[in-house]
Image (cartoon, rainbow, N blue to C red; front, side, top):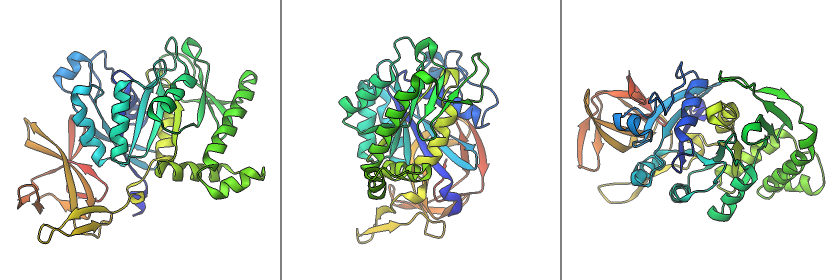
Length: 373
C-alpha cells in the first residue's frame, strides 16, 4: 500500500496546440525517462509515434508511458486535442486518477478545452491547470485564469504567478513559499534558480497569496478559523488543504510556464505528486455480479480478487491485438486466466507489457493501480 501512495496515474488533456505533447516530452526528459528531448516539429516526439502523427504534427491516438520523479512513480497518458479524436480522451479519462489540463496563455479556454473539461467532470477526475506558452506574444496569465472562471464555471486557484510575460517571461513566483524561481536563458534544459521576489512584483505576490489562502480556507474549517483570527497558517497546512480541496473537486490549482523553454515543468511535476490523487485516495471500484446482477465493490488492494478494465484495443504488428488495461484490484500475471465479462468467458493473458509510448518492456506481474498492456 505504501507503494500505491507514491503512484500517480495522470493524463494531459487540452485544446489543439495548447502544448500537451510538448509538456509530456519535457516531463519525460526531466524525469530521466528519455535522454533527448523530442520535438513535434521534427517528428521526434516520443508520444507521437504513429507515421501520420509525425507527418501532421498532431496527436491522434492516446499514448501511455511511465516515469519516476523523486520517489514517485507516474503513469502518464498523452491524449489528442482534436475534436475528431475525442473518444480517445473519454477512454483515457475513464481510467485516470487525475489530470493536468493545459491552457494556452493567449487564448485561455478554447472550445475543445470546454469539451475535455466536461468529460473530466463526468468522470469526477481531480485536475490541475497549467497555463502554457507564457513566452508567446500576447501572453496574459490573469486573462487565461479568468476564462476558466467565465467559461468553465470552475474555481481555479493560482499557486504561482509569472515573472514577466511574452519575451520577458523569466520564471515564476511560488505563492506558498513566497520565493521566485528564474531560468537561465538559452536552449539547454536548466534547473530553476531560487531568488527573492522582485521588488516590483512583491505587492502583487502578497495579494495573490492572500487570495489563495482565502480560497483554501473556504474549503477547510480549521484553516478558516485561523484565517479569520489572523493566525499564522503553516505551509504544510496549506498544502494539505490544497490537496484535500483538489481531490474533492472544490478547487483547481493553477500553475504557469513555457514547456518549450522548459520553464515551470519541475514545479508542475512537484505539484502532480503533491496534489493529485494516488490510487489509494479513490473510492473502491464498483462492478456487477453476472450471476445475480448485484453490485460488488473491489478495494484497491493487492490482496483483493483481480479486477481490471480494458480501455483501449489496438492492432499491433508484433503482438497482434494489444489491450491497454487499468488494474483496479488484486494482481495478474502473464499466463493467468481471467474472466472477460464482455464475451462472457475465460481468456488467457498471453503477455504483460509496460508501455513506453511505442517501446515496451515485458513484465511478469501487474498489481492494483498499474496501467499495462
